Length: 296
Image (cartoon, rainbow, N blue to C red; front, side):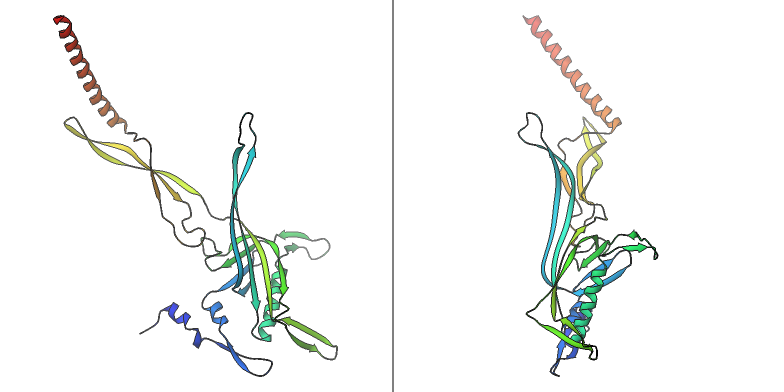
């Protein structure tokens, strides 16, 4: 029996990497498979340059906030302020640990966080003299389906900066890069990164309103006629997969309060039929009144 892709990706026992510790012992780190084959990583891309860094998804916290903004203004004689809608903002607060299973991975992690720090700065134009900013440091952040846009790319936005906090309880790896110059280097075995992304929406959000109409058949007197009638108002999300990749209901139908016949020709037929009935009724009432008056 052949395994599908996901079953194969879940078989991480056979997809491990062996490292040698400081004491000479060997061990396996299967988190590489979680990252590379399971897609469990957090990525940041510097939009002006396309530079990307990826960290293993050792999440500590993830907070995705949506905030409709309202401008309030007082009105004379009103108890409540007038509320004017002013847009909806979204921000993601994220914190995650970056552990190292070996000194090699610790060096790689420190290189990544150094590159991440460089991504907080813009692209400059002009190498001599005064420099001008060519491109601001917009960032795309992605974490599986929790932080992605409708094209399965990272969410575009601006970062509030980030904090780099080595975990002192975990300790460090220490190396002597140049013993003659007594140049020693420390690499944290684990550190924490925390940041906040203010999302810039790239696709249409909110609800789209349309009207569902259709032909209807009805019996008017002895004649069956077809008329055009407004049936329902249809409200549907403009981006059904927003924000976590799960498609919501394609439509939500709400019945209208009035069934207005809109076809002009049919209106005339129905009005003519109704008018005939009204005329017949009036004539009948007139006769009855006349007869009643004569009897008197």
